[in-house]
Image (cartoon, rainbow over all chains, first blue to last red; front, side, top):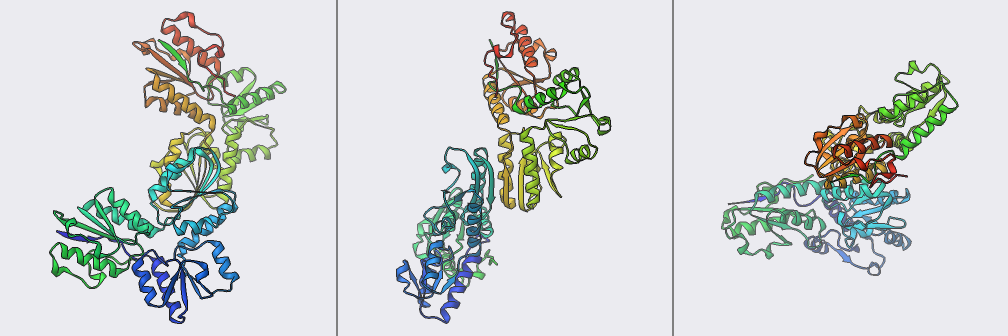
Length: 295
Length: 295
């Protein structure tokens, strides 16, 4: 009977960076806001609120206060409006997301029909599409490609998608276009995390995926895991049901890029409790067997 | 019992054009040569010799005579040498091949590692690679990609390859590079011809593929057909063995882009003869049931 944590799980570089930027900005300023949740984890957002970082949802709620740009980025027009209103911008956009925005702009300027592989309702994709002049096509995968021919297609991806979905998309476009330029904008940490989850899922009887319900990368981990084994996507330990572990031997645990250590730890301890191995409880994430901190 | 010819077979635009250029040039000039075979069909090359167009294999054999550049193109250095020696150039390079050479040059100048999908010993690929400054990678397909990571990969294809091989190549490169630019240089007529062959092969008990043994596109048609049904790749009717047709009902016939009509016709008539349907013999290719002339 074992509980193993995926070798790569929890906070990624972009999330760590965004939180660091937010906390540093909050230290010298008690009138600070984020426009939308800074990361897709309600527990972390709540913690930041307790540190004096208010989350607002609309531009009108900013009321002149210094504004943190969420890790997923915001629409170009919002940045322009903040500048026009002389509002201090604290940019916590993940640098990989910013780079994808630059590619979107560049491909669009070079006359490519820009294709974004991603979720059209996700803030990262909404922001990304604002950098494209003229037409753009947002697809979740190869199955969404319209039945027509194209001249120049420029492909980018939401940073948290699966590499094999990008491979299928690109392959399907080949007979449908004359020229294709692809920027592989899937974040490397995302790919590594997905591989770790896949490996662990193959060896487990049950997988617990921890992370925000709106978190694209967490949902993707759950999707990858589901293909191999029974999987539960939860936000916190209190959602765990003891019944899940009946007759299970090997439990796998993984967490999205925006899931804080303490949330993973609580889940780990709760699983241990459910399985009757009370003395294995841990108080720090680095003590958890199999956990490797990501740089 | 039937003999069907693939809907699209025989001379393509580039081959027709090359022969027209050669014959027109020969009319006003009896001292004309081609450097290498103008197309990959020995029967047609022989016919051109009888029209006074001598085929030479080495630069030294040109001896100042006006020189036809073969449909597959020649190395940049050879063109430069012809110019330096004040030799009249009659360029019969297929325009689609010339375009591929331009892409090779452009991608190379833009800092891409240029990847050519093709046969490294084929004259088209030898010529193509001469337009690339610095390193280039010639692969027959996805299985030849080295196990390493790349920054910028620019992919082009020999014009006569299979589109699904290009799809596999591109898909395999995605996780191995940051940026990819693909020019789909597979000639449209090639793709259409391959589709026609595939369709016919599926409905036939036996396939005869007619064309030069060195002809890349003909070899590709044979390869496609072989996956479905017994297939013979022949150059001329005299290679046909009556035994092949024993107990066969539906014979399919297809021909490469450099196979002249009269060669296809002779093969068709020989098959009819072998099958005992002597009265179906034809004297012109357009009379052959199922044959559609390509524009």
